[in-house]
Image 1 (cartoon, rainbow, N blue to C red):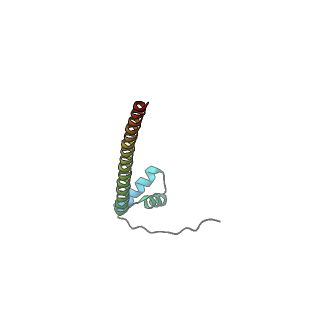
Image 2: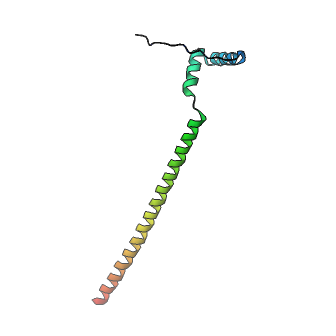
Image 3: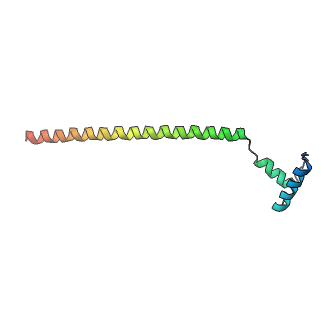
Length: 98
């Protein structure tokens, strides 16, 4: 069964119609297909701003995570150095005791 089709009327100036017709012809598309694709692909500046804000928030979260990882690695490195120093001191004391 064929899908139902509805008509949408788009008002344009004669110059706009000429430009749209020329573009459709150049692309080898019917005008209706060109208009459908254009309407489907359209994104408003508001949507782009929202995406930009989300991208900024994601970048900030990634930076915080990276800083947290760096802090954790520095803590582990300092802890390993303290443990190595305690082990070296214990080994030295053990040698003195023998």
